[in-house]
Amino acid sequence: MSQSPSTARPCADTLRPAPAARALIWRDAVWLCAIVVVGVNLRPLLSSISPLMATIREATGLSFYGASLLTSLPVVAMGIGAFGAGVLTRTIGETRGVALGLLAIGLACAARWSAETGVVLLFSAALAGVGVASIQALLPGVIKQRFGARVPLAMGVFSASIMGGGGFGAGLSPWIAELAGSWQAALAIWALPAFVALVCWLCLNRKRPANALSAVGHDAPLPAISLVCNRRAWALGLHFGLVNGGYTSLVAWLPAYYQQHGANVATSGSLLASMTVFQASAALLLPLAAASFRDRRPWLVAGLSAQLAGIVGLTAWPEAAPLLWVALAGAGLGGTFALTLVTTLDHSGDHRLAARLVAFVQGVGFVVAAAAPMLAGFVRDLTGTFTAAWIMLAVSISAMIALTFVFSPRSYDRAMTRNVGPKSSA
Image (cartoon, rainbow, N blue to C red; front, side):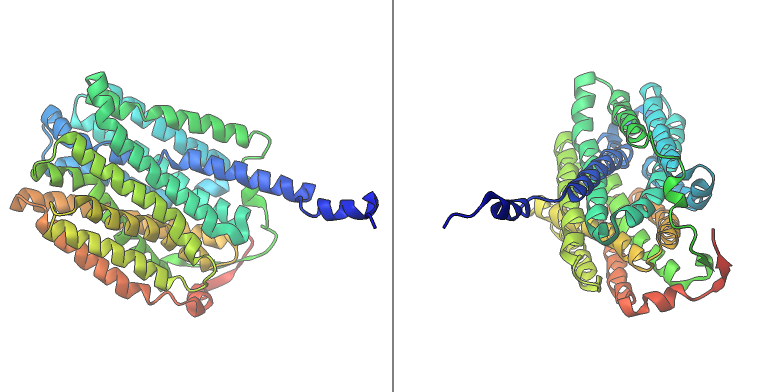
């Protein structure tokens, strides 16, 4: 007997998402796209420098140590700027804070068009670092509130876009320099995607009050936890800093290291670009793999172990399998970067406290990470090779593996209720 249309239709409709669900999926997709557009602008200002380092040093007269500041100074600015995230949130809100960050990156990159001295490059590096700091400190809190249980996915997408942007900077900058006949043009071109991202961000938020996300949920009181006196906050900051110390060292010196072994500028830049491809892939996939596990530690150890294997390979057998070494190091760096931020957000269900904690962790972490390329450059000037720098990096990764075991999920509440002061609604 045939089924009547009235009884058959509900079965067909159940295969389709409800209108409200479709609208939610659409909004999440739009926000993920916006996160990608913003994220790709956070690393070209660093990665575009290293493939052209020899040319820049020759044109400006910078030493290896001075040139390392072009990578370290933005990272220091990222760290110091992250501590001001709370002030930005309270005064202008997340929307304007991210917009100002994109504007700073765009102006800093554009200033490199006419750079003739190291001073101009260093100033632009500091300004861009402040812009990156505001974005990196404010967006995770927005992600925590907007995506809820899907935080690992959103943070993975954000981290992958950051790493992917670094790959674009490393891979395209030598080609642009050759095409334009100017290293300044190869650095300044990255102002364009920053301004495009700024327009997209403002269009996405044109109907939303600047402090809308800050205001949501503020009726509930927030414990006045002193993060400066909190041991877990410092442990997470150190962990994040050592992860990024590996990233900043390789971004600054991997091309120079392989140029020392006979590679040309294009080949060494391609190796750095390849590393960032593996970074981006792992930054997306490792948080997704760990998403169904409350305990992130085994996955953190896996990422750190891959990074350690890559650094050991670069040190001991640099010419044997360079693509394998940069693949292992890149996958470890990207996956651990993203998963460390996810682990930090896991420590509190309140998006405001989570945002404060992420900002603090990034503030400490980027200051720590800034020392790594400077130290590597100093060692290179002193010894004539990068071997000692890679050995120090391998030791720090081993220390991180040991530190990872502290981050038990059972300790989250206890760790974050230490140093709790009077209740606050702010």
